[in-house]
Image (cartoon, one colour):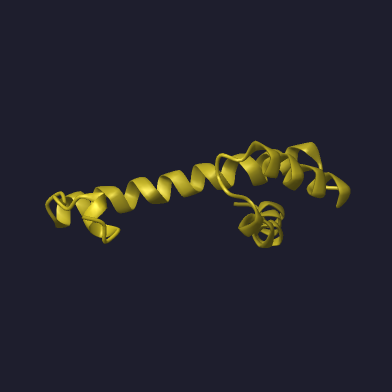
Length: 84
């Protein structure tokens, strides 16, 4: 990762808590805010796309590790939620 990309990644991370995956309106709001802050289109694509790809890689890595370390859970979601 270049110094420029590292700076983009670090400077944009504070914006992600306002974004909940699946809410296109919030992605649009985030994009508008980045444009207002004069981020380039290339940088915005890096922030939106590459951060998601990095997250997906990390999740796949953890999932793979957990599959090796333990058996699948047989607990039902209702049990985890405390519902009968």
